[in-house]
Image 1 (cartoon, one colour):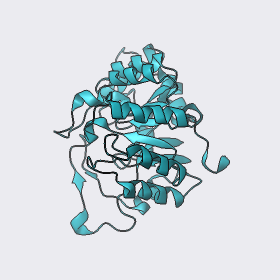
Image 2: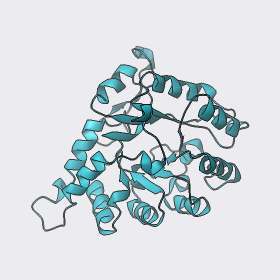
Image 3: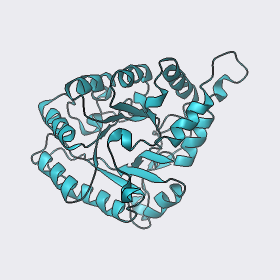
Image 4: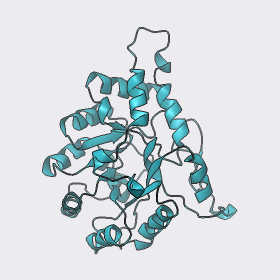
Amino acid sequence: MIDIHSHVPTHRHEVPADELVVNEKWRPDRAVAATTTWTDYESAFADVEISVCFTIARDRKQVDSALNDRVAEFVAAAPARRLGFLSVHPEVPGALDEVERARLDLGLVGIKLGPNYQVFDPLGDAALQLYAYAQTHGLPMLFHQGASPVREAPLRYAHPLVMDEIAIRFPELRVVMAHMGHPWQRDTIVTIRKHPHVYADISALFYRPWSFYEGLRLATEWGALDKLLFGSDFPIATPAETAAGLRSVNEPIAGTALPAVPLDAIEAIVNRDPLPLLGLAHPGGG
């Protein structure tokens, strides 16, 4: 199992009581501890061969180089099992210099962006310069796509059809659209099926069972199941939870005549190796 979507823990060691953050809006079935430790991550990923991990640059005034340093430090603790993606706010001064530093000095191999959370136009000039750099240097990009409970995060910046515009302008750029762009899975599916280097991950979906079934059934009918990648969105969910959720995708239609999502295709998602699809080498040369 290779997990393409996980967040670097907030704390190396135990989380102090006054720093504990619990989010009740991330998933509908339970609250989630947003503050996690290296041990929490290691426990959740014990059965995962390789994980892609990152955080997200939210400072809109200056480069947060410490954030990328933290990702690199975490990757260095298990270099045979982790790949790190950098993050910058494209509009801050020195953003491309930080990308260059993170690529060359820190060894980070991709870019994570959330234009809605970071509040920048994903089709603006600064963002386009970043995509051009990523395409030139073979850095795959993972975008938050779809809904967010954050009131100040503009939904239009995270709509899947924006990725269609980006892929048209940068046809060799490797892109992962997170969460199948929920709740706009249809728009995600028609985008990934037309662009050879654009994929979607299935993270943060299984705990909305009907929406999850509908999205994967639509991907089945549109012939796009092979463009879906496994991701957990840890700490919102664990890889084991996500795999179990995938294997239970047809439970909402039990006892009905509705068509099922093929279970062999589900196993293919769980076991798919996304790294060559994204132009990435296995850590350690494996």
